[in-house]
Image (tube, rainbow, N blue to C red; front, side, top):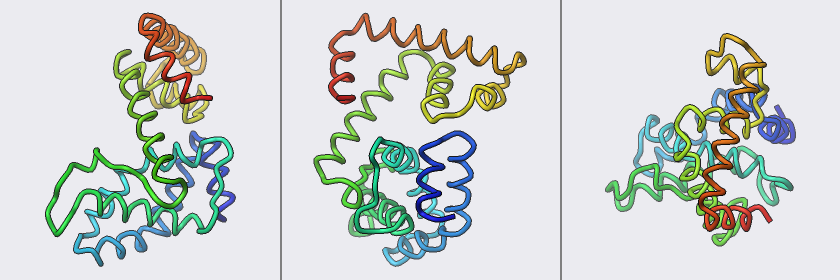
Length: 193
């Protein structure tokens, strides 16, 4: 796959996005593992670092107008994994959990990285208020999975129709929460401007 094909697949989301990640993992895992091993880590540590930034990378690439400015996708992903590793380990000691990661340096400025982190943290916090089932459904929908794919992943016996109904119920639950918390709703709207 070319960089353009990978970006398009991740932006499309769903099964296409999964195929792009599978391609990158199969073909590029040696590169990020090598980079982390140079820093004293193991191949498993490198894969853990990738897992910690996978969603943030997908969200960044999926954002409207995403472009690679100075590097290719391989360099971008390896840099993100390396930065995640460095954020977790300092002087050979683990200083924070991988979940406390920040992407930085390659695709956006430090300010942009903090903006994305704050926005994603706020979104994750809001979604956690509507239950894990709804959180999963709306996350899959936001990642552009088709209703058929959501039905399959969630194990809905009624297929696409059931997935649509469940997504709608979850959307209503989300909107109800946001309407009851206007400050959070307004902050989210600020992020989407």
